[in-house]
Image (tube, rainbow, N blue to C red; front, side, top):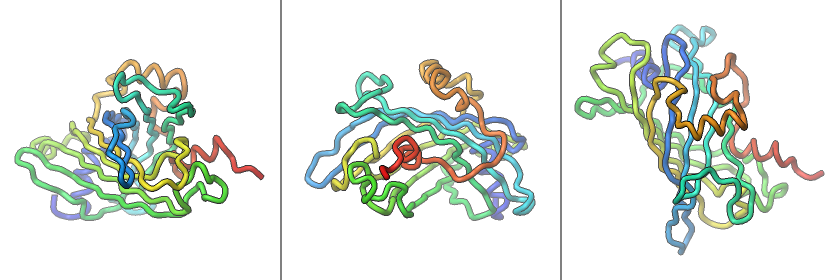
Length: 249
């Protein structure tokens, strides 16, 4: 794993499958609130999954890929771990991101050697015009610029990466700093949320916990499969909230 193309190929085998098969990642964790002068609080449990398919991106070159994926995630009661329908009297809007696609080009993927393991780490700072401007969504927008920090780590065994399998077993961690969620109706209150999760690449979608599979089957069954073709733009919790709650004319 020396050139950017070789690094990306190893990362692609860890995150997805070079042969194009569907890959499911599942994760679980918690969401904490923070605000000036307030103690940190665990406000939600969190469980989610991403179902992805990797395809070659011939238009961008022989070493480029497109990741076609959908992801669903659910806010849980922090104690019982049941999927929430309301929080403080407000309806909970779960994560239904379709699509959640990516374009990959060779780049020096950050790698840390951890004994028998290799860790690929991705640090993604985000800052762009919010889909929910304050003027249109005063109760549901933290600001006119959406700012967040996504931190991913993917762990694979060095011996697996030394082989020629198109997909290798992997575990992962994910942390995120974000504004208050739109449906929490916190407006421009200072502070926000910290997500802290860990998970793994499953052998198949059938390994997703039964409760979660049943919920997806009853709500949005298409989230059990990866997309068949590229589409854009990506959905986010903020764009999804806007679609559910169009601005008043």
